Length: 296
Image (tube, rainbow, N blue to C red):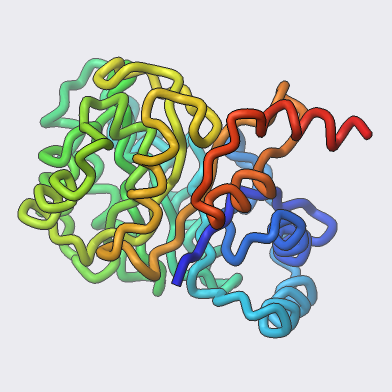
């Protein structure tokens, strides 16, 4: 079955119920959200009432809650331990986010591995694993390491680096991977040969470790290490290649999440992109149609 959705908001009023309603407005059957602002530590307490209402509505609409994903805040950086206090802050904050996931009944949390900020990849990988080993197993939530574009000193832009982190994690049951098509392209992987990539992934890490796919086109050429998302079919990866990723039989029953940019930084494209994906037919006039439809 195709599980397709996008990232959505999670606000004080409505919380999970509001996230679900936004996803439903896009005709999605899954979604991803942050439990608070991704750039800071401000968090509202989880309200069980909103969660229960959301679960009831999901049942009514046929939404499989096990396919809904949370994304960890960007400010968590387990790779950097130059300042021990900042490293422990990242560990504590991730622990708190996992606790919030447990309260919400969420199964998967996507995490950027982090940036080494001059420490070097080897030290960063050791730090990431150390931080994860301080947390994993304390909650029934699986952390999915996101494949990165390799911008700046990002760790996790190669399968080798992802594998090295996983190899050092003690609790293998609660560690996995989130593929991001734009990041993979910008890291240098050929999304036009996705089956070959999956075979490489399976041999190195194991395809069963993939828990989520971020579906994004890219504004950049392959290997650019820039990480700039583009709307589906309007970038360098292309519609047909993205459709091949989304409908790949080996990734069936894994949530596919759109993180494509708003049109003119104002109009959410997800309802239209999801329909285009379901139809498997690219519309080169889609962005203009979005502008025209919403302006009316």
